[in-house]
Length: 148
Image 1: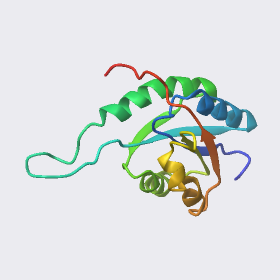
Image 2: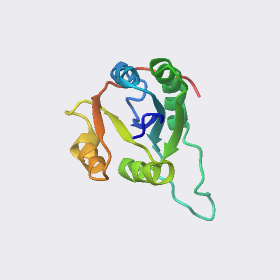
Image 3: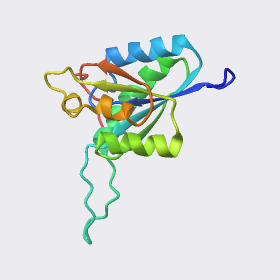
Image 4: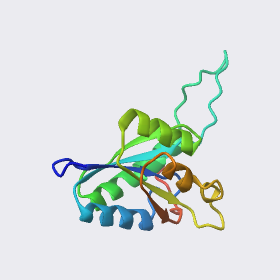
């Protein structure tokens, strides 16, 4: 990466998006050098198109997670963190983000190993196979999300 450009860092999180552990990891990454962060929250919805129900629906849960996480992550980053809702499949969401927006590195925040579906799917390893460095964060789910 040229020294004059900020690193583009993709943060992938759902239930741990506002966790203390992720906030600390973002602060540590920001301290290492110039970077811009984007939070990707994979959708919690299974979107199915039908004649009676369009495929485009708001994912209220993802929006609530973003609302809770962005101010905390922005504070840790020292600059505004932007956020997007991606595909329900986290690997597909990351592939889309890498293809459309191009990131230099990825931070994946997951629940602890005993309960993490993302760990059992080896999400970090699959993201590494896409050719991007990955930092793994083991976080805890916040107890409350803001009201819708």
